[in-house]
Length: 260
Ligand SMILES: C[S@@+](CC[C@H](N)C(=O)[O-])C[C@H]1O[C@@H](n2cnc3c(N)ncnc32)[C@H](O)[C@@H]1O
Image (cartoon, rainbow, N blue to C red; front, side, top):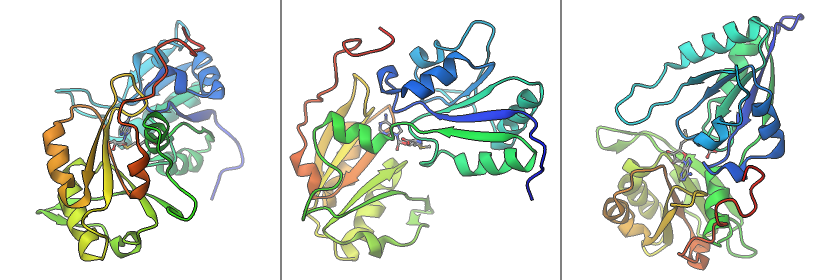
């Protein structure tokens, strides 16, 4: 049950895929007025720099060689800072509602009497589609878009429901799927998805250093391995990826940026 008195406020804000000019104006305003900023590793420095002087800045996500902060610790920090009367901005890569633990954080905060607002962000799949010029849905060809992830344990897929993604008119955007590419491809093929289905491996979508490699479903894991990505990777499986132009069409840095 939700307490009746509100004890502070937290904004769960989407920072987009890692390019400052893909931040929404509402998100930028929230960061510019933050009293405390808790941000994930995928959030770019240019966005963090929008926070005002005197704002408490806490990085919660890991970068090379560091340990990630536990979710429990992040929850408690947000609560403590909100109860001190600070405007707390919890800044997450992409959209907070897509694999961003937005639901868990909202539930925790509201259960402790803290009001929560969500400001959406550009999710990795949208950024990838825009940058490499392919659609995520396409009339008469791709009638369904599934945002999914896959969990692997002991070399086997732990997540279910792959039969529902085998239809040829489904575009599947696989988040956090780098290590699961082979197992997912194998399962989809077993469920009837053609082995020669077009796919795209996209690293650093939305950023100036983005890369995209085309692959067939049966060669997806090999394509990921050959790409040897060091940044975040999204796998897109579906015929729409045939339309991709592999040279990124990203805007030149600063050309349309509100932060130039
Ligand atoms: C914890 S999830 C967060 C997703 C995020 N909330 C969103 O909406 O994009 C992290 C995963 O999202 C994907 N991702 C996030 N940013 C990306 C980017 N710029 N390029 C490619 N994939 C990205 C990767 O699969 C990464 O492992």
